[in-house]
Each structure stands twice: as C-alpha cells, then as structure tokens.
Image (tube, rainbow, N blue to C red):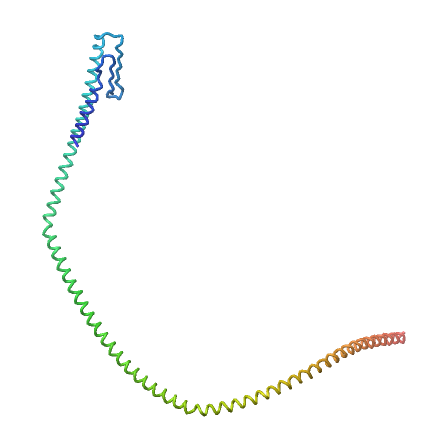
Length: 263
C-alpha cells in the first residue's frame, strides 16, 4: 500500500514536469498555491526577445519547483503517518494473535477433557437408548403374544358359535320344509276367501252405485225443498213485518185512546 502511494506521487511529479515549456513560444504552469489559488502562467513569445523570456522563465521555474517540493513533502508526510498507523495496527494484530494463541494453548487441555466428556456422554446415551429400545421391543413382543392368544381364543369361540348357528339353521330349514305343505293349504284357503271377498266387494260396489244414485235424487229433492223453504221464509218474513206494523199501529191507537181518556 505504501509503495502504491509512493509511485502515485512520482507519477504526479512526472506529470507536472512534463507540462513545462518545451517551446519558448508558449509556457503553461497548471499548479495551485497553498491557499488553493491557481498558478498559471501563459507567455506569448511571438514579439519578445529570448533574454526577456529567460528572465520570466526562471522565476516561474522556481515557483513551480517550490510548489512541487511542498506537494512532495506533504505527500511524504502523509505516507509516513499512514505507514506508522499501519505499523501500529500490524503490531496490535500481532499482539492479539499472540494472546489468542496463548489462550488457545492454555485451554487446549480443557478442550481435550471436554471432548473426552462429550465422547463418554455420547457413548452412555447410545447405550441407554439401545437398552430402552431393547426393553421396548420385549414389551412389544409380549403385547403381540398376548393379543395373538386372545385372538386365537376369540376365533375358537367364533367357530363354536358358527357351528351352533349352522345346526340351528338346519333345524329351521327342516321345520320350514315340513311347514311348507301346511302353508300351501292355508294359502289356498286364503285364496278362496279372497275370491269370495272380491265377489262381495263387487256386489257392494253395485249397491254403492245404486245408493249414490238414490242419494243424488234425494239431494235434488232436498235442493228443491230448500228453494221452497227459502220462498216460504221470505213470505214468512214479509208476513212477520206486516204483523209487526199492525201491532205497532194498534199500540199507537191504544196510546191515543188512553191519552184522550185522561184528558
């Protein structure tokens, strides 16, 4: 890093030196002073003699050289400070590395003990897990054996029950076969009774139709009688109104006669 800064400074100096006037016709100095003001000198030597140009060139060269020297000194001081800082950082890093190495060396024995303890603990855990798995497999085997025993007993009981059911079913089938003939006789009797019932229903249907016809006639007569009753009701209502009017007139007349007598 320091070498890069040094080479950059040299490149800067070479760039400035290459800018000096190689032709007396024109000279340009692209530099800045300590205050940041531009130090630019442009000399047109078309109509000026050479000794005047030299007298102007010398002070400009001195200014340029002094400015370059100041720039170089500032750059070198910065590089020196940077190198010192870098050296301090490197020293601190070396010290830190030594401290880390020392710490690791002191704790190396402890790390070894911890590793041994971890290995022993891992082995113990593996043995414990293995014992637990073996115990679980034994328990599972016992459970499976118990379940198989119970299942065999249940299968035996089921086979016995199936045999009993088959024997009962055979007896039932035999009883059904023996009762089939009786059932056929009963069915024939029921068929005859149903035929009789069908004939009776047909007769009942004929009688019902006759009764419906009679009911229709009765209804027609009833409608006629209802109409006659309505007429009689209307006549009776008119007669009742007439009687009421007559009664009211008689009451009025009696009232008038009573009044006349009182007078």
